[in-house]
Structure formats: structure tokens, C-alpha cells
Length: 129
Image: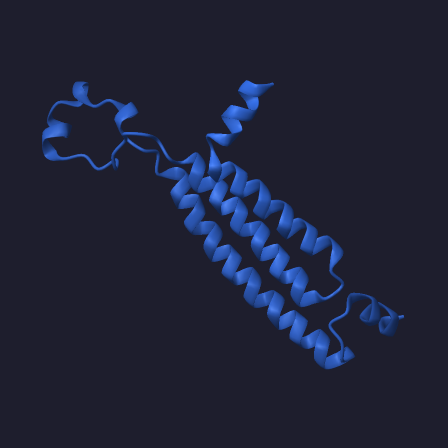
């Protein structure tokens, strides 16, 4: 059991991911205020981005940009010496989706507030019925 605990302590990024994920999830589930729920969703999304960046890191690896000398002798190219760019591209795409989601959510929350005069989920549900 101590080996598992030691392995977890050696990865502070994963500990930060779990803490941020749980904080965002808790805020999203327990708060009746829609703005607080939106903040919880953003914290949760940011924690997932942190996880993707953490997965994409490789020790002692370089950027996968090849020079003309590397292309001239393709037998020498070792993929273990390069970082996989796919997780970083996914993070950039997820950031764009996160910003778009935030903008649409804020517009919907503004429309709900103008129509019902409250941001409390329970009050809005009572006024709808």
C-alpha cells in the first residue's frame, strides 16, 4: 500500500487534477445559483485540461520538428526522442470549446435572469410551473 501512496505523491499534477475536479464537481452539484454552477463547470473543464497536458509530457523529449539532415537519414529518427503533439492540440481545441460554452452559458443565464428575475435554480423552476 505504501508503494501506491508513494507513487501518488510523486505526481503532484495528478493530485491537483483530482482536487480541482472534485471542487468543480462539488460546486456544480451543490450550488443552487446558476453562476456558481457555471464556475464549477469551468473549474471541472480546466482540471481535465490539466490532465491532458500532464499526459502529454515526456521526460527528455524534444519538439517533433525534423530538419533536412533528419529527413535525409530516416533510419536514425527515434520516435522515443519526441513528444506526441496530439494531447496539446486536443487541449487547444478544448480551450476553444470551453470559451464558447462559457459565452453561450452566460447568454442563457442572462436571458433566464431577465425573464424570471432570479438566478436561483429552485426559484426559477417554481416560477416555470
